[in-house]
Length: 88
Image (cartoon, rainbow, N blue to C red; front, side, top):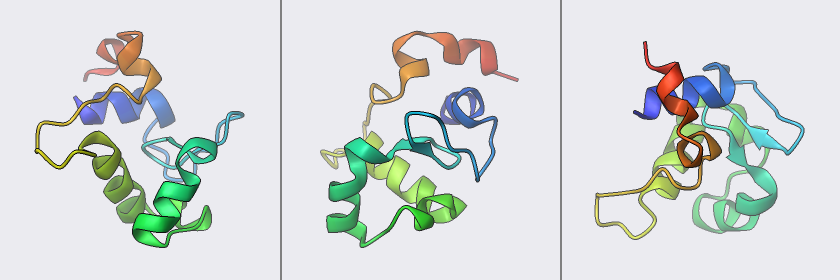
């Protein structure tokens, strides 16, 4: 499911940047997550173009409560069910 979501969100492009300032392969919304990401990881906007760091942050957003269950709710393509069109 994550692969389909990220394919829809960024086309799996590690350098993707949207007009709403969603960045990297997982399209982390920088205006929303900037401060929590800096506090938790010490990462900058530039770091979000690094695939490993971007996916680390995406997993943290997915499983913020740490229970291992997670939620894709923060991603718009999940909310709209359009991720299903990106399954390959």
